[in-house]
Image (cartoon, rainbow, N blue to C red):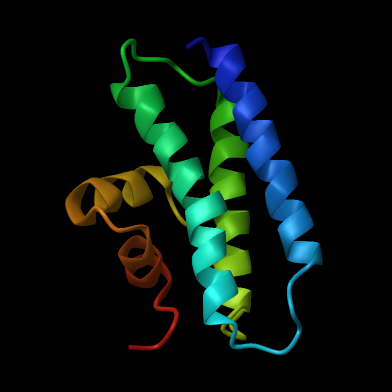
Length: 120
């Protein structure tokens, strides 16, 4: 896959995160929706980063593509946290998320470790 093909996927994931944010239920907690967000948005975004680094051929994302990918991942985490009535106060590294995913093999565990949401 070429860098341009990743750009298309990143743009799609980013647009979907924006649409998801607009459709969130203002009355949390909504654990079912939080898991849907992880499975359909956050997980695929982190997986796309992993694929770009470990796929058949290593792809160097442009600075703009990388920023958009990391921004999309953070948008998905914001949506996830909003399902628990929490607003995140920072941004997270897509590389750190990828490393945690490789270690845990569980997208929910990655989100909980990174954000602390929901409270343990």
